[in-house]
Length: 167
Image 1: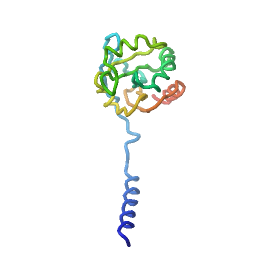
Image 2 (image 1 turned 180 degrees about the vertical axis):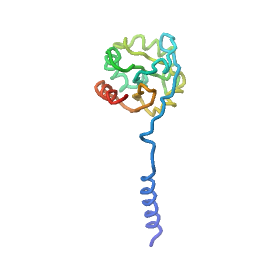
Image 3 (image 1 turned 90 degrees about the vertical axis):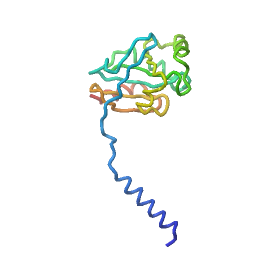
Image 4 (image 1 turned 135 degrees about the vertical axis):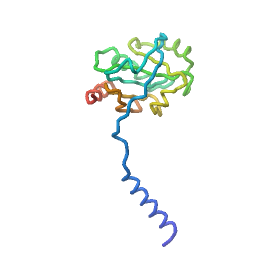
């Protein structure tokens, strides 16, 4: 038998065995706690929302997909839902403006009066939440568990339907 055939068979066997390994896909873990300031310099803690479901959107001012969904997010944040709506940007990280520049820019942003923006200076929580791209939606259950994280635009209907399935 030729060497490349043996190597191919060995690799195929490794893929099959590796596919049978247990995963923690369904394991629950607590959402990383955060203490961040909003655009009015008020302290916001995840602990402030204990017992509530929380939707968190990580986004950036330079992200066209993020910006195109902001009016829809503003509508969601202005509605009465059984979950809180927060957004997080990472000034001076991931090509984002500085906190001062972002705050000034956001003051002129249209249709955003209902949106709570938290500043994650340097992107600490971007990393702790495992964000790999913008926008990223994070769903936190009322028990504080990180239920789901999803990259890409998510419509308000999908967000609401997801929370209907979450305790």
